[in-house]
Image (cartoon, rainbow, N blue to C red; front, side, top):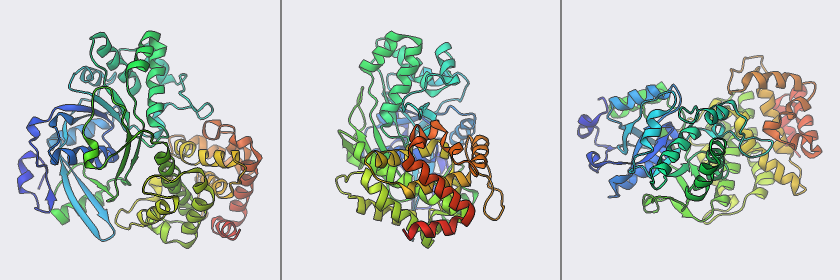
Length: 489
């Protein structure tokens, strides 16, 4: 049965459906980036809130800035903006339909529909999931990069921006000029201090256009930091077919995810917010310890298992956790090099969080692919791995495991596996990475000279020497022997 408003009452009774009146929804949140993660996370919480009797003033108006978003818009519009979310655990499964979306803006060059929607007084929050690499952060400075061509274009053409940040600036300017209360800008991407990073990007664009506007934004607009967590793999045709077979449901944009769900959010909002704490969101004064634990242990942990698994020919994360070398590699680095650079949070010590990760990564139902975990290392390594190495070295500790992880990433980016099989392009900067990985086979420093990834870390002997030794071992002895040698130390 095709999913739409008319068929909701006819679905398999095991599928939970919205209990609220969707005709009363108002777009309190404009969300940019309607990928699987947002729909399994932020939108999931909002749907839960509305089902519990929360205000229908907090409906979600979707928006996209990529050409591919137009197809998603068309698919969701055909389903009256309904979609399914299936939670899959080890031996458990549950499905529901989310109805919290109340529209999806046309995808247009210059983002005119987004800028116009931001001027609606009902919109009190503009939220984002635009990937870790979408924030124009310089690894060398750790701050906003105002010299990006797209940012320079936004500064030159404020009325027709290329980036989401240029669109937000245009929307905020319109609200300021109209004497309206500004909306809150809320990032839901996996970035350390994502609110601060978002503020830097928005203010950076505004400052290039109009210093007075930048000062007004800094003084009047809230950018709460948040930590978000839920493993949400890509939707495959196999998964969609399974949904149809199990529940008789035809959904053009289904989402599949693990049962685990967490959102830690600072209570900093310009124009109010939903009652999120009533549905399990942790509202805190400072997210720093939570995001350090999550980003360094979970996202960093994904990187730890990813490249070794790829070189060993594994396909899924649960296979990696069943592999004695990969799982032991993960455990050793977590205990010896990451516990030191995170702190316990209420309800979770480092050991407890690690144990939870072991169980989550080993979930066979989620079938999280190694290819997905390997994707976009050039943007993920500086955020998930490099800070842990830098902090350990600053505190006088060695980083043999994390240096080996980095060497495995380099070997993966060579583009050819140990059995001479091709490794397909898996990074926006793949051509550059492949070129440097091949040069690094004989001159390891070639890889470490990527200052946008490593900053000045590649110049520090504690990392540089360990990386060079690990890479030489991978090339001369192979991945398996190198992992064994590391685990024996």
